[in-house]
Length: 386
Image (cartoon, rainbow, N blue to C red; front, top):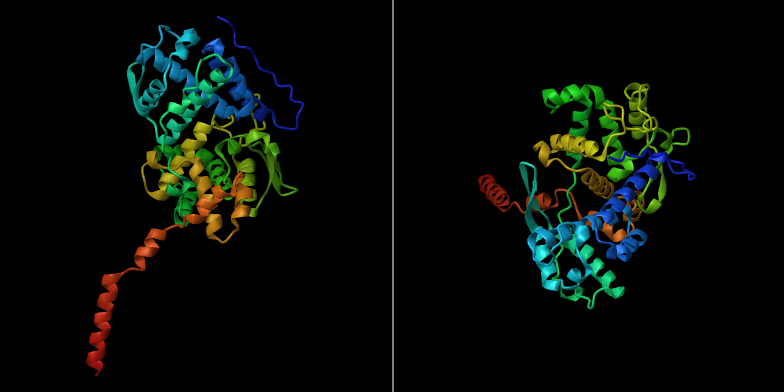
């Protein structure tokens, strides 16, 4: 069995090593998936590498691998037993209706793992991405004259809700205050959760305040380092999608919670190699994973909303909370778009259209029965005065 190679980073850029390492890990995952697929997809692999973000590239490759596994297990279109053994001639015989059946299959299916069977259900947004993954593959094969015709015109459309049709999920201001009170005092936590909270409350509070203040993406917060912060200049640096970097100003609240965490709770010794500069550390003194941060946010948001832990919000909903709160305070959508790194201001406009409690306010303005009774009371009082 081949030993796993030790990866040493020789970083000639000004980007932190952990950001470079993360991109390298995603790239290695993509290459590993490509080795599981047939070699005739080489031009498709090259297209993805040069035209989409690394995370999107990985998602597309995973979709294609799943499509090929579907062809093997659910159809008689191939005699292969592994995705990489599927022949080009077999793919050339796939029709649009076969792909449509695959997309329909993806809506709800069962995946077995040992003694456990998982029921997988996908929404239309995920189905649309899977359709896109397969469409791009067939177009690439047709463009390279590897298959005789372009079958993608026959793919069924998938209705994805327009942005304006989606309900914006965000915390209300009072829920934010309850959540911050919970992380400060431990209110709402179970006895078991309080044991860990005693060791991580300053870290947890810093994470929530940074999320709420800047609307950072999960990956942007997870990659923060101690060296990202320049307290003398009152700023810190984050690394965005597509290799962009942004310098964010520090306000008093963020400066306070970050200093409090670094000075009073963050481990100073015994940190494993490669984690020394990581800002948010786990109890094992390693950089927190995205999964750990996601679970932390779900826990505290569930307390703020008085729902079960499973019903708590994801970090992306805190991003939506930042947007709706800033716009609700009268800030320009263009300024909010710049803060959140929205490429199109139309994305930010969705939050401008969302007003907290708008339905409740509208209904409260239509108190027909109360108004009727108040009118009757006033009329009765007027008659008595006469």
